[in-house]
Amino acid sequence: MGDFQSQVSEWVRQTEERLTAVFRESAQRVISDMQSRVPVDTGFLKSSLQVSTDAPVPADRKPPPGAAPAYNPTAATLAIAGAEIGDTLYASYSAVYARRVNYGFVGTDSLGRTYNQAGRHFVGLAAQRWPQIVAEVCAELQASAGR
Image 1: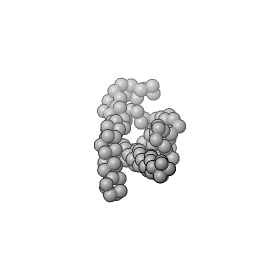
Image 2 (image 1 turned 90 degrees about the vertical axis):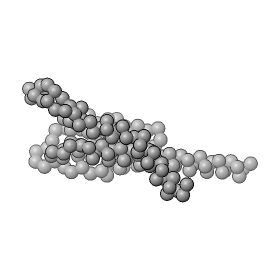
Image 3 (image 1 turned 60 degrees about the vertical axis):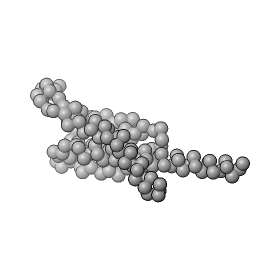
Image 4 (image 1 turned 135 degrees about the vertical axis):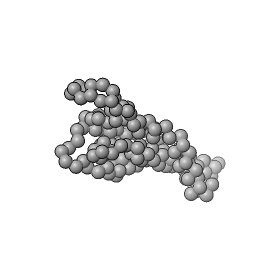
């Protein structure tokens, strides 16, 4: 009986490891897909992406004077690497104009500027691909495991 219990325990451990690997890799790919869709003018919007398991980051940052920093995916990768099954990953753009670029805006803002801007929907388009990305990651992991 002990041998059967240890086999089941090992199977459960391996299953949890595989689920976590699929979750993390799929999250990484959705975020990469989202970032590939962000329109780039100065690069500030793209570089304002922050990933956390705590809470969404408020969109309250304004571009710095001069050149905007380049996007560095390391922080996102580290946040994803620490995420466990059941955690919520928040991928938030902290640029003050992120919502306007993503969803679009027609009208006059609180500063009196008039916009007629179509949304680019980079967040939603990437999120829509979640089922496809999970399926791709599962297939790749199964192939690499020889199954």
